[in-house]
Image 1 (cartoon, rainbow, N blue to C red):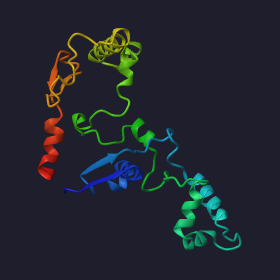
Image 2: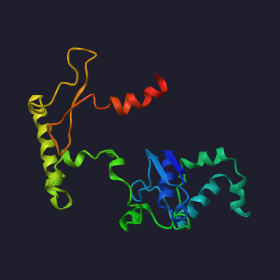
Image 3: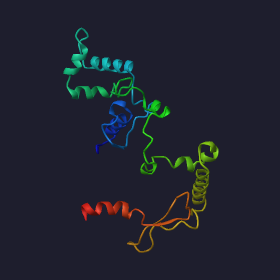
Image 4: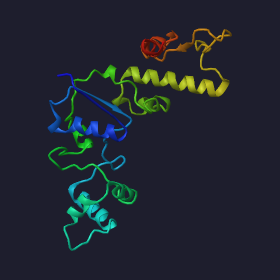
Length: 216
């Protein structure tokens, strides 16, 4: 009941495949993905059966497998190091249209075939999620954003342009550190519900506090 799977990079791809696969339902409770996920049509990270068969035959040919014998058996006998050498020319991709992964990640997202019970607050902020607000996307496409998003985008653009114009974001933005080198860091909180929030050493408890138990 308490199994958590996790992986980084290619391992994270595997974790995301397990999240999407109907065969993995119920065999683990939680999943952690670190820098990697299936997203079909972004980096072409999955292939269908026809493409996979073509790739396998190309690798077999690259390994000098005799076409008159069973080339699949030849691949099974091949040294793993030799197969890896072929990967630069013939990338080895995960396969969909199978029992394990019947559809692509994109199709699963489009059809909402994924777990929707996750607490959004635990997901954190994804890479590049600041860009829509910096470039005013909520103002250009207001139907897909909340009034709070639109307000926040206006604030962020004002902060950026003020800094570009005069070197200051606004009068409330604090200096990170005062003259005391051991002083408490101060950070302007970019919380759309409280845009005047001033945070003092906000990461001490979550960062230093966590590791202090192990290293201090």
